[in-house]
Length: 144
Image (cartoon, rainbow, N blue to C red; front, side, top):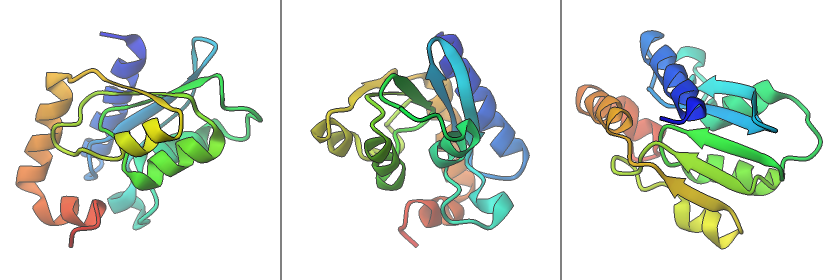
């Protein structure tokens, strides 16, 4: 498995260990991780603390993003896809989209290359969480 996706999975595990939603993300530039994050909505009581947003925040101001790759264990939602579009990220690689279709079409329509690796570990981690925490998950995706 790609070392960057493995780092995103490690972030997802951290989120789960903290009592949050197991979604992790890393931002890569020039072959190095410059930002990492995980979903902190539950932990921080912050509806905008999605994994990709946390990751981009942690990368800080880097000027240009068009030469970065955003990795996420789950297909980004419209909030996170919007951030990728806004900052000009050109490539997004995801662990899976079976549990959540997300905004892949939206990203592609805005010139982002989207690759779904369909990783069983990502699917299982997310499906187990959804099964055990449907209320938290539905809130996260705006389906209260």
